[in-house]
Image (cartoon, rainbow, N blue to C red; front, side, top):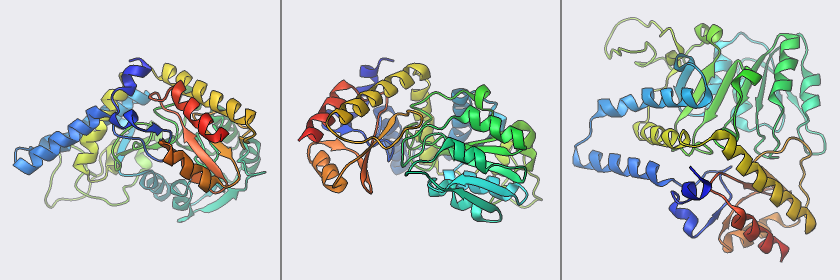
Length: 360
């Protein structure tokens, strides 16, 4: 699918320059149609709740295909925080290294029962070398986001994998701010755990998330809230003893049906795209904005890896964001900076619109 064809699936883009996907994207028409049909069936009583429930298994299979893993290693959960908390509760108490500026859903869960070492930023930036230096033989796990939400920096995951291997630590990777816009090379990273909430770059409704666990570690997983889905299919509903499923489905949350039906539709859409083409498209637009913003005197406070998220530092960032919104451009203010994100539906005209307004 070409970018212009993909763009045509988003009605909101007819009137808005949407650069706020790091917060949340507009709804693609195929996903919205799926949800609308489900609501109509619910309202009219024509729905089949067993079919709705099956959306979880189908979405799991689609997600596994997207990331290149065995569906048996994938848990269907409700959020990134739930994924991190599941791992935190499943592993023995250990020293966990995490960036101090990490998004809280990948920070706070580790504080429950573990000794957290929060690596401070230097000059406002999380430094790859500082994360590596913080690792030692007492470290049990390193938890990072591939793309940092506040800075838009893409961390070198293969380098972090090599560093954790040297000290015998595990690697937990959050790809919520990257998967769907940036391609992911599972063989190069080999994470012990990978988690993503689908409501950003994967275009899912909020409430559908996944945790992938290396096959040799699946047996350690323990559900945060054991329930009827913990035993795996065929599911039972009454009485009996708790015998956890042999695969990662043992940590499935009881599903929010509408979220998972929307996720299934969104993943079908994402699988129609070439991930490498999507990444090249998004990074090209990000590079253009950085270069043109610097030409008009704005600072890009990130000297790390380039991602599809661009953060520009400016005086009166709140005022700038308000002017952008008044001009039909959606972005997010983060203190003294404004954050922009490029998906496959964005184009050159979006960059031109931002530069024109910021130039004023």
